[in-house]
Amino acid sequence: MKQMVMKMLKAVVPLAMVVVLGALLTACGGDDAPAGGGGAAANDGGMRIGVSMPTMDLQRWNQDGENLREQLTERGFDVDLQFAANDVPTQVAQLENMIGAGAEILVIAAIDGDSLTEVLATAEAQNIPVIAYDRLIMNTSAVTYYATFDNFLVGQMQGEFIRDALDLPNQPGPFYIEFFTGDPGDNNIFFFFPGAMSILQPFLDDGTLVSPSGQTGIMEVATLGWSTENAQTRMENLIALNNLTPGGNPLHAVMCSNDSTAQGVTNALLNAGWTADNFPIVTGQDCDIISVRNMIAGTQAMSVFKDTRVLAANVVDMVVAIAEGGTVPINNTTDYNNGVFYVPTYLSDPIVATLDNYRELLIDGGYYTEAELYGN
Ligand code: BGC
Image (tube, rainbow, N blue to C red):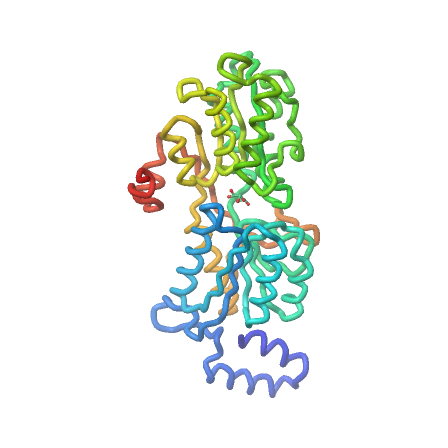
């Protein structure tokens, strides 16, 4: 990458020589030179971008990875896309390989935001810009930019949905609710969960909402690996502990931070005899196909739509700007501190998805085909 070569040269070579060498590099088709001719391809020189996704187990990361690969390739980049099976050492090894293979920019959705400090020190030493994708990478100065959705707002939307569905401001209650959030290694839960609690905590405080288990702290309600099975097991335990069944004690809502946990909760509730007619309000996020089908079946009330095409497009814009030495698009510099500094961030808006608007959002919007959503 010409920019980096220039940076290194500036450290060791007199200015006049740097100018001459810079011109030579450009003449040789330096791979970060802006592409002419219509602007479709930003990088005809095939600058190499390492894209590291956490897992193929969850639908969204497959979509994220594919969207990034497609959009970056369209812009002329050479993409090294890897999925890490939700295993931190695997992600670290894949990143080491990407760096070794000459990646010039890294785009990373971390499995555990705290576990990449060492490998990213290597990236930093080689001046490789790092974009944290969807999840912030913590405790390192090596992360250059962050692109995500407004994660606090995601949680607020879930809380507001429950508040409005139960009409909490106007009903005496008590309404019974349990809480599920995601993996403690994912910094996003520290936005999702407080976002939801910013709406619901006052109703817990005044007794309108009651948690039968009494588990309302973020660590008590965390779900390792965001796993559907772990969420299902915990919900089964909560049901057994307090007899939360249609013939037993009431349960009005389960606040789940995302769809993979919501699916586990829904499975447990169905097994306990709840049906679409009396189903507790279950929230989610991602509009996973399984969860959209659950919404249609009446066994999940809402999800939050975060269009992975939009996130990928934002990141591609960042990559292009870095490659061309242009202005990198950011719209937040005050909310995402990774323990070292406030990382320059681009936030996109999430959208509430329910039975009322899912067709418009997902099918008319070209996110899913009818066959994907309704087929087997
Ligand atoms: C993402 C969510 C996703 C969750 C589990 C979070 O970091 O923002 O969209 O559901 O991880 O993969």
